[in-house]
Each structure stands twice: as structure tokens, then as C-alpha cells.
Amino acid sequence: MLPTILDLSSLRAAYQSGLTPLDAIQEVIARRAASKDPAIFITPVPDDELRAAAKALMARAPEANSLPLWGVPFAVKDNIDAAGLPTTAACPAYAYRPEADSTVVARLKAAGAIIIGKTNLDQFATGLNGTRSPYGAPRSVFDAAYISGGSSSGSAVTVASGIAAFALGTDTAGSGRVPAAFNNLVGIKPTPGLLPNTGAIPACKSVDCITIFAATVGDGVTIRKVAEGFDAADAFSRRSKPANLPVSGLRIGVLADAEREFFGDKEVEALYDQAIERARGLGAIIVPFDYAPFREAAALLYDGPWVAERLAAVETFLATNAADFDPAVRGIIEGAKGKTAVEAFNGRYRLEELRRKTEAEWEKADVLLLPTAPTTYTVADMLANPVVLNGRLGRYTNFVNLLDCAAIAVPAGFGKGGLPGSVTVIAPAFTDDALAPLADALHRAAGSGMGIDRQAAIPEASRVVPGDDGFIEIAVVGAHLTGMPLNHELAGSGGRLVKTCRTAGDYRLFVLPNTTPAKPGLLRDPGHKGQGLEVEVWALPADAFGRFVQKIPAPLGIGKLTLEDGSSVSGFVCEAHAVKGAEEITALGGWRNYISAKLAS
Image (cartoon, rainbow, N blue to C red; front, side, top):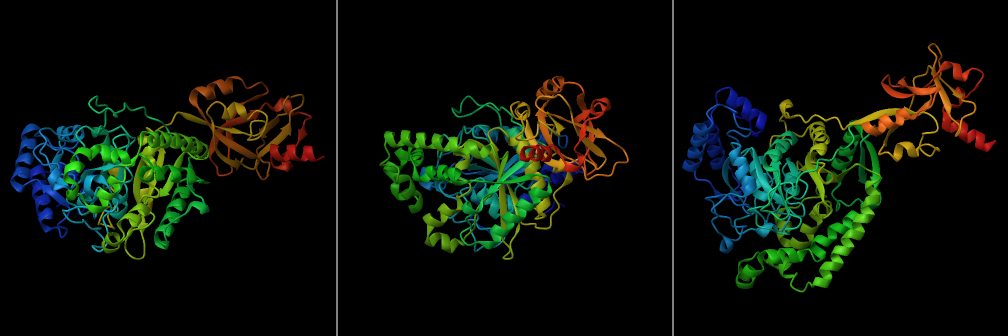
């Protein structure tokens, strides 16, 4: 018996216990037939062909779980090629039948995954709502009156309803994240170029990303790693250059009050605030940041010359088949006809100016935590006001690809009305793996289940464990504190401030004589009952830590300090003989207070 939501660990366990891919496909066929949403698929793989695919896999790889995705059923957004199935981009007049799989689909099938069909989308991947298709509008799995999100509408619904274990989408402005948000799923939006777009119909070719909808972050990462890799056939494909994020002392940027906009949706705003507190509870340092330059960059995607990329993708077809376009999609794409090369260059210049402004905000935070979508709408409301309401959905997503970021959308709980909220963690390019542990921890802490099954426990087997980022922590007590004369030795070597705290109560602090700049000496005195002394814990890259320690002059050295919470960390200590006759300043509580008192005297 398979669970309501098909995750990788449950499937693997079932296969290990004797279930076959043919058994699983029979269940998929039954679930697909029982679905009450007729708009999920554009082209489902026929039942007999699905059974044949399962049998072919069992003949090719008879041992259970002998391939990374052995017997895992998946769906593909219908702007991505899959051999033998038409690609329509939700425009019947545009349809063609590809002779080969797209690069990503080919890799997934080689790993043992079984494609079950091509899913519905906002036509030509132009929209964030899921209503712009002649094949109908897929609906939220929680309330059929509400939109599914788009443009990867059918892909999200097929996973959230338990028909497929994962699905491919695409993302230019948020299409791989907004549908995840509205259906209580994980949306993996890789660094642009990490997954090749060979065999995918472009929307904005320079920023498009193939994405993954999955039940858990761990599943999404596993699938992404199968699908990624450089492909010379895609001019925008890139070789991965993995980047780290802090394992401890992670600074998470959240919206400052002036940039909060939920369009009156108090429930989504409350879920965002709850997610911030969960991040704080995980040990993150919460830092308000200025979203304005990111928001201005986001506006360029539709209000600037990038809309001309959408015209470039379908210009020839539009010239002969304008009547075959959804009216909202046609209006957006035809709006690019007046764009000039001068505007394109000016747009590029403006983007770089805004990128420079965002650099100042990235100095404050390692990761951004944003609402995936600020609100949602009914299908009726969206059809009545398709452009304005759709634009609101992309407020916190449109900038991400333009500014070359990785992102993962995760569930964030449910409002009183029974609809899900979602947050997205975002960081600079190639932090895809480094983002995953945080995203996974936030999903687990939300307690919102997976897809339509709100009570589902996230399998322990899919947990994403933080890796060692190669940084070593060190506690400083004197001239290396922030704002002090030697702090540059930490900050200038790639160090980051983890936290400010106090030592345990049995430490004493002295002013060392004849030191330039002035330095303190810290000693542990068992039995001394004080209030602890202020220290800062910094993290240094391993090589920088070695160089830093090597330069420390006697009588100072590095030993283990016990902090007020009972934990220990490497930090500055002093040889006992050096403080004989020295001025004791323990009662002042720390070196910063001593310097302030001295300056005031």
C-alpha cells in the first residue's frame, strides 16, 4: 500500500519489500483515473504504454532500487520535450512531436524514472496563476475555487495530489515556486544554467530554469543532482561551482516593515512571521534588509526590455497565429514589439546598477527568507483581473533569476481558511546544496505535511544534513572585537561574526601591561562566581584560522573557553604569570566597557 503522497523514501522502502514498478504504475493509473481535476494533464501517457515502460525497466534493471530513481513516476511540464509525446506549450496550433527527450528528461529516464504524462501550464510559460490555458485551469488541491499557481500548474497538482512522485516545471519569474506554494510542496529553483534547458521551449532564454516539484527537500535535491550537469548544446548551461553558506551563525535577511506587502492577506503575513520565528529557533540571526533594489530589479522582467525575450521565442509563430494565443499571454508578448536595442541596453545597465545596490544588502545577510507569494486568488477573481492580480503573485519571485540566485520554496503552514503558505530561501549562485539543509529544517519545523496530506510525517530518510563549511569558530575578547583596532584581521580574512555572548561565570579579565594596541588577558579561575565576560564568536576559513593563530604573540594563546550556555569554543586565553600585578577589570563585564570607561575619564 503506497502512501497518499509518493515520496522517494516510501517508494524505495516499498520496492525493497517486494512491490514492483508495475505495481506502482497500476496505482498511478488508478489515481490518475480517480482525479477530480480534469485539467492536470495535456497528454497523459496511455495506460498500456505506462505498463510497458514499467516492464521494460524491470527487464533492464531487475534488482530493486538498482538505479537512483528506479521505478519513480514523474510528470513533465508541456514545454519540455519528451520523445513520443507532443509538446504543445498549451497552444494546440503550436504542437510538435519531438524525436528526442530533452537533456533533463533523458537523464531522469536513464536513472530509472518513468514518465507518466505532459502537464498543463500557462500558455508559453507566461503567467504565475495557472488559468491561461485552452486545456483548462488546474485548481488548488485544497480548494477547487482557487488557482493552482503557474505557469507550472499541472506539474504541481500532479505531485500534490499523489499521482506522481515528482514533476518538472520551468521558472522564469516564479513558475517553479508559486505553484509549489499554493499546493504545499517543495519547489527547487536551481541556479540558472545548472540544469540544461536543451529541449525546453524558452520563455526568456537567458534566465529560464528547469525546476523540480517534490514532496520533500531531500527528494528535490536527489532529483536535481541526477538532472544537473553541463550540456554544451545549451548556450546558457554552466558548470557547477558549489558555494558554501555558514553552518553556524547564519544571517537570514527578512523584509523590513517598509517593504512588506501582502495585499491585505493577514493569514499569509502571519505565516511568514511564524516562519521567521522558526528560523530564529533554528539558531539563525534574523536581519531586516532593504528589499527595494530587489523589487526594482524584479520589475524589469515584465516592465523592462526582458519581455522582448518572450517575443523572440515565438515571433515567427505569433506573426501567423496570433488568434491562437490566450488573450492575456498575447497582450504581454505583443507588448514587446516596440522595444528597441537602445532600451535593451538601458535595461541591462539598470539591472547592473540595481545588482550593485543589492550587494550592500547581501553584506548584511547570507540568505534571504521571503514569502513565496504574498497572497492567492480564486479562479474567478483571476479571470476577472488577469494582469494586475498575476503581477502581484510575482512580487517576491521575479528578481531571483535576473540576479542569478538559487532558491528553494518550502511549505510554511496553513491559514485559518485552510490554504497553505510558503516561504522561499534564496542565496547567490551555486549555493543550491548549501541552501538545502535550511530549507529542509524549515519544512520540518512547519509541521504542514506534504501536498494534500497535511498530517503526513516527513520521512527521516529524506533529511538533509548540513555539511562542514570549512570554517572554524574562535572567541575573541579584546582588541579583535567589532570596532576595535585589530578586528580587520578577522573581517579582512573572510571571517564572519557568529554571535555575541558571555563566558561562564568563573573567568576573570585583566589589562595586559605594555601592549600596543592595548589588549586584555583572560584567565579561568575555578570557584570565582562572576557574571561572565562579553566575547564575540567569529568563524574563519580553515586556512585563515591557521594564519591567524600563528601570529598570536605570547603571553596570549588559543585554548578552550566555556560559554554561559555550557558550550565550549576555541578562544583567547592568557598565561597566568602575565597578569601578576595587572589591573583587573572583571567587574566591568568586558573589554568594550573598559575602553568606554577609559575614554570617558
